[in-house]
Amino acid sequence: MPILELSGVSKSFGAIVVAENIEFAVQPGEALGVIGPNGAGKSTLFNLISGNLSVASGSIRFDGREVTNMPPMQRCFAGMGRTFQIPQPFERLTVYENLLVAGAFGQQASERDVADFCADILVETGLIAKANALAGSLSLLERKRLELARALATKPKLLLLDEIAGGLTEGECRQLVATIQRVHRRGVAVIWIEHVLHALTAVVERILVLNFGRVIGIGEPQAIMASREVREIYLGLEV
Image 1 (spheres, rainbow, N blue to C red):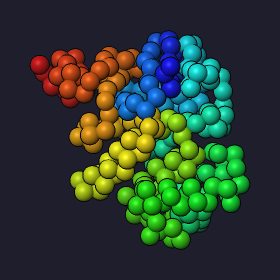
Image 2: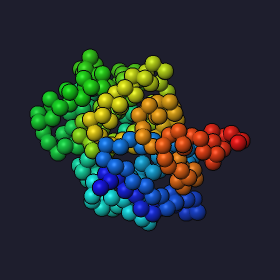
Image 3: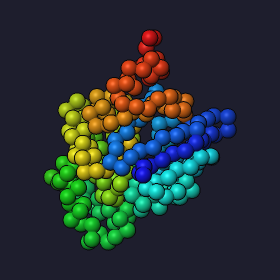
């Protein structure tokens, strides 16, 4: 049974179609990459999956349950975690306190109950040395790590990553990819929107391509990147 399944999902704002009959499924423990040019509807897709945008038509099933009309909070409780392109931590809280808030909320537990788990996440994401630092003092890489750590603190079955490698140096990107690989090997399903293709292909088993809110291809990375249509639309090449 898929961990996530979209069937005929569509959304428009007046005459502007941002999602058109989107259909795909993600299996438990699978990593799926999402690519497409700017304005293709990638973040809109995440907003529909996470419940930040309502679906006009179609259905979304998560972990065997119909969640099409379920609010974001309930999807988080069900095991859906998400990062955002621009990290927005609680800047006046420490790194560890940020995780405690996320863990207690997402797992519907007390901070005491999630304390050890959050400490383990700090180790896994390379933030343990910054545990008592204010989140507002972090570098870009550390903020990206904290964004990932906060999502992991909710104990997700499915992790939605929105351009988490953007703006990082080559070395920082490699560090972040290694962390995501470890999370994926634990069996967490991942859907990752990313423009840094070498980072994406180091993790995912399949790639989905969006253009103007439509899925124009889905398959193994090598086959997708060799596609004429993908090369013309995404890479801007004349083939």
